[in-house]
Image (tube, rainbow, N blue to C red; front, side, top):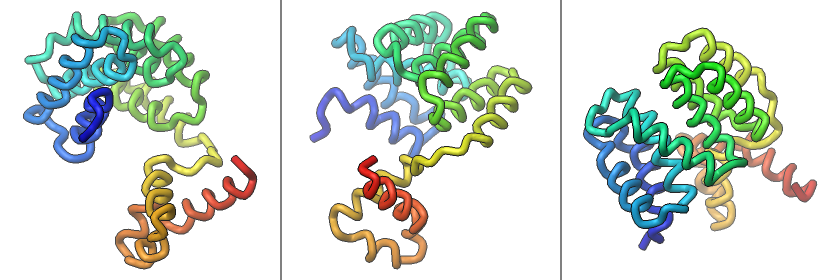
Length: 200
């Protein structure tokens, strides 16, 4: 019952969380191809397809025509998502892959200006730079990310935390010892309460 325009995102999440590896790239690739061929202006699909090209490179997958696809998709993702930090991040990595280091560096800075709190995108760029053998730049980026002091709760923990809270099950889940960390723990809950009280 998943709406078609979310299928790419669902396959991406499944690939990362459940089945990351060469053998399991195909369902994600199939979803991206189907969506971008049918809807040429689907910003989300093009963006995640460009990310898939990075994964294919990192996994050494030769079935994906990376050289032409990644460049075309990264440009299209940037065109459709001009204010999106991830789009700039993926284009930056594609620039480094092509050897255009100057443009890649510029895009890294743009991505960080667009969303200075986006540590997840920063980690993705750092990992991608490591895969592309740009060690020094990758480690510099990782150090910068580690130094970020954000007051915003971690979204990966905030979402399940809110999910259980709205269902009235947070206290029950939180008291089940291993599950408390899965929903973000009391620290995340405290941050959320604080932000709610300040109407943030």
